[in-house]
Image (tube, rainbow, N blue to C red; front, side, top):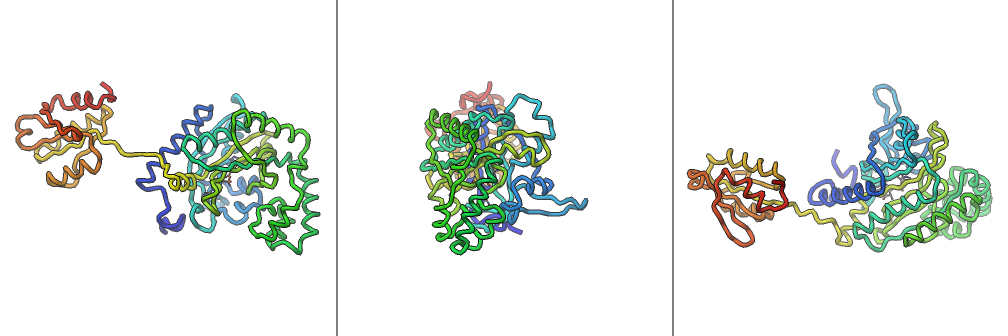
Length: 426
Ligand code: HAM
């Protein structure tokens, strides 16, 4: 099996130089989330498959077609996580987090797995950054989550994003509306594609997701859920919008926005960078006040979102805004006297202990090759120790920008380098 099974060849961001940009952007997400009171949580990569089936919904593509399911040696039906939310809520319920101050806010980053047709921006193994706030139904929390997501994109420098926002009401609002929608579909069954016809019984809300132009034209006339939500859910949504408006977060109301997972209620949203084309969705989320009950917990409100890291990287690369991660090299050790290598390498390690970034030749290069290598890694200075210097227990420290060179006793080298590099600890 090769990487190309998970993603088209050449698009993986797991190797340098992209891996550095990837880590920098996940780091920025973590730092931003933590400034907003979120703490890190990890959940298992595989869980009992019923956890996802019960929450994301049997009619969802994610569960119906895309989940990697397997039976282990103990005859357990397991699944590779297609997303974080169900696992995070399970952990919240099982590990007593409901006894902490609410809402409990958790961020995560890691691989998710969906068996989808591999194409640009759509992989079978992909990475999400995820945030959940569990235990409060305050509309301010919805706004906090949207602000965290949009704020991260802004911090990364992404431009031209479109935020779509909707409310799908409470579960109780859903049944009367679904009856209306089914009645509408029944009148138009002859004009819509097979997949839409199938959704009539499975989950008619999904009919809005159709890619077929004729069906889309029909669905444009369909009753929308936003017009059929109850008074409480409508008031909640108005208040979410007030919080967003006060923060100056731009969004478009899209009454046809239905998310691909069944556990949502009330607020839902998606963020897209339209120029990515078919896989333009770089993030999405919503409120899921009934999810905890679906997995046997007490009624527990929650709201969260996830972003596809690879898609965000594609957008950043296209906008030439990949976070710069030029590796730093404070000193390149050019040890030309073979006998000196163990000692100089020990001094290099001591300099690293002081916080300096140091490298040495590790491939038996001659002097010329070592100079080239120092250049390639962008070394700020070289530490040269040839036979003559070694005999006198000194070395030459050469500034690569100014060309200035001074002789330093080996005993003083680490302190000298630390002083030159400034920021390193004394
Ligand atoms: P989702 O919309 O299914 O939501 O996925 C979130 C994001 O993951 C998408 O917007 C997309 O960027 C990325 N993504 C999804 N599938 C793939 C794929 N096959 N390849 C690459 N990227 C992909 C959720 O997963 C919810 N758990 C979000 C959430 C959290 N809702 C509440 N809390």
